[in-house]
Length: 268
Image (cartoon, rainbow, N blue to C red; front, side):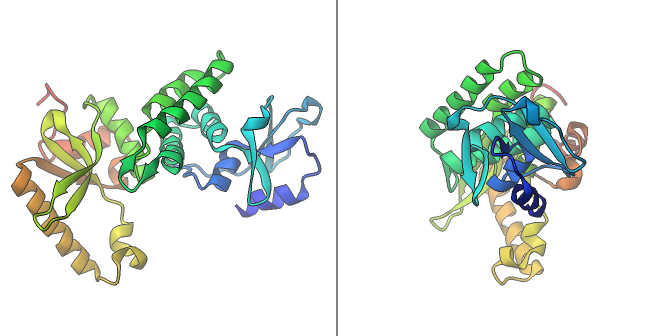
């Protein structure tokens, strides 16, 4: 963000707007395992297309509706930013950004407004149609259809991608399980085709004091054990947890699930 702000302050051309990963920073989108060293800008004026060691300039015609302002800085809209990322970064980073973008416009709590999600997809589909034949457009089309705003963390987004690569059926996300006290436990993934539940366990819930709500690590872990035991006992489903170390590849996640006797349907 500091780099984006510095380049924006020093920019002399009004023809350029922040885009790609730099617009993602302004929108608060995750950059999964990306470490951009250059600020990205898009210009409609090819005469001013030269880049610099710390700035990458792209030449493209942006519609007026594809440009907005964030924190007083001209940048691509949320939809255009997601579309540009979907074409140019890794599938894992692209899906993470798309899920987060969709979450901003269509999700409240654990519920996704499907009408709002459909409008969001339509906007990105129109961009994809207009860019037919461009580099990365096939990946972008897949990301647009694959995105689900109910994924709350990049780790959940990447897990969804790996589950699909492993051959699991599309999981349900943020699934409620009655807790026996009038409330609900929320599960990240319901793998209905193999009668299992799955959770991406970020370390933050244990190590970040702000997420522990004043509880000790031991108290959090005990609560998680009580929760997991209840879910296993009442649903009779298998239950697996995994973390960052298990999503480096779909093979790593597959091995983690196999350790809990969870395999894609039809495989043992």
